Length: 361
Image (cartoon, rainbow, N blue to C red):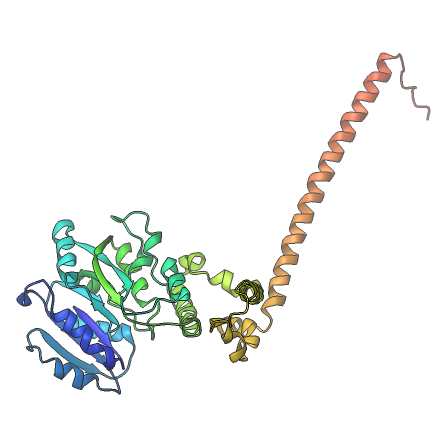
């Protein structure tokens, strides 16, 4: 298995102990740790774990991001099947056993395991919201025997090593942990790889997050989405590139923030005299930069001085097309109605004996 890590020494020891204490026999797997230029106690923590070098292999590189670290780990791996996991994921004891069982049963496939919040964590309402498909969309999987590449999360997935190598590995243009795993899965799936979902292959995400932190992560994800789109323009719509470029997206953000603030007031009143609980909405006033961010981030990505004006130009163009089409249709219908009326009237006059007088020059 391949485990990239960066400045998470406080949790890394527990993760490694969990990976080394698996139900699978010790001689059937190895743990390859790639230190992505950490500046904390990562080397000491790995040494303290004290596993045999044949089971726990440690490599260090300068900081290049998780994609490069995983590629390093793939190159060093000696097994035919590679499990990818994260340094904030504490595995169930049967994690490797379940992955291997799926590969034995299905052959050359990619196996996606399940990721749940660690039982030690206090799951906030926001973290529950993330579980509904925002962070890990397991609930959106329609066919567990043929899963779309969007669900290939390197916190818990496995694939045969040759599949990664044949596609050229993770694209190192992705510098952060966003879309680099899904982009690789897209390329592997285009080459015929079938992905399956096995919820019994379980790991626990030991990572508390807040709205503020997740907004920062989403901004990185937005940048990564543009990198993804430029490599695969056919995915513009599912990546949300065109939608995000419109000023209405920023307007929607402000509208939802106002609606949420109003809802908080209603909730406070319904609670009576009890003091309001700390809430993530404090972010809206703690960070003044959000006030200007609505349009600034659009300009940063698309180099557009006035995205709202651009949207209005597009809207006016579409309205003009619609008006021209309406004029064309209605004028044609009016002509045909007038022509039919004239023919009917003339036929009626002829029946009444009216004859057109010959024209005198």
